[in-house]
Length: 277
Image (cartoon, rainbow, N blue to C red):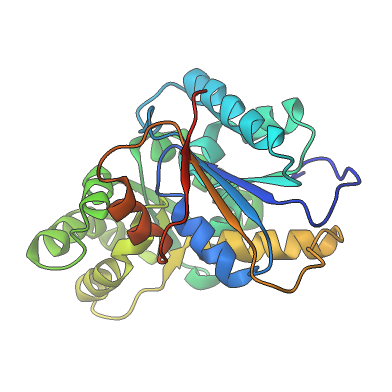
């Protein structure tokens, strides 16, 4: 179950939130896959990261963010955070009166297809890996597919710093990928919304270690595909044809925000609004 199928206005915006700015990679994919949809994005930049928080704290933060989006009249909520998707989706679906979609099941589905019967490797935050969410999601799709997880916290820092190529990203990626490839992973899931920025170096290092190309699964793109299909199934695609609007909200506005946000979003920023939760 993704959530209730209430009669909603198909021209209402999609709500997307993350613990920080990484979820803008999901927004980027949504704006490519569903270009006419309006999107309201909330980044909880005052309380990032969620990946080191307790499950109870993550659930509390997630409900607070979701209620802000509901106050903006969204027709569905996309959780663009692997940590929240791992520990809070069930509670959100009970507590909220809108459909709630996460990033883990779409990523798991794409990984099972890409692995072609082989094992799946997952790079993610400590919180996402220790939750066991990806193994559970994969097991619900294929009981014979093994899953190996690897926390990769330094990749988050590299993405935020814009350090996306060169010797340091290469060596850090290799350090995290080696256990996965050596264990037999035949595809690697980018289980954190920061990681698509490093996809090229991750793909190159995985191939170098394996001696052959290894598919890299971008859960942001897989989620955008899932959202598009969901809207179509529910008759909730917007009737507009022009490019949708993007509203950006954050809970803190650090000096580096614009540079980092544009890197994740892949387009110039509009107005950014700071709010308190």
